Each structure stands twice: as structure tokens, then as C-alpha cells.
Length: 64
Image (cartoon, rainbow, N blue to C red; front, side, top):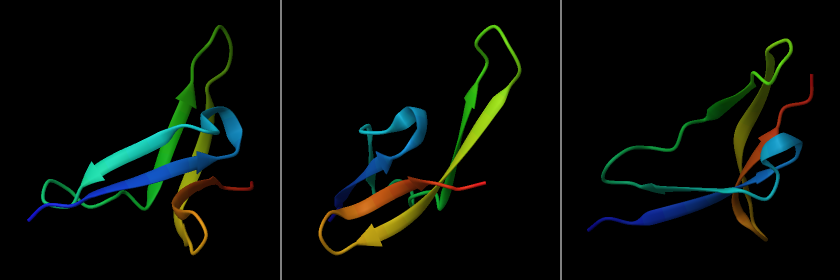
């Protein structure tokens, strides 16, 4: 049996978006890197996976 999981993004440019994965296909990534390349220097944001009892899985923006 496969199960789908959902994680929301908190903070940064991906705030409010969601990631959905299926456990039979892959495990969730512990860290996701988001890269901006818009007419300027490359800007990277890092999101780390956390579980919150009230909301479930979240990718939270890593503070630098």
C-alpha cells in the first residue's frame, strides 16, 4: 500500500507552497535548496524538513 504525504513550505520565496510525495516512490528530502537566478547574483535558500504536531510536515526556511 502506498501513502502520500504533504509538506508545506514556511518562510522565504516558497512560503505557502506544498510538496507532495509518495512513500513507495521516494522518501522525503531532509533539505531542499531553492535557487534564484533572476538578473543578478545567484541566491540560495535552504529549507529543512520538520514535523509539527498541529500542522504535520513542514519545510522551514533555514536561518543563515
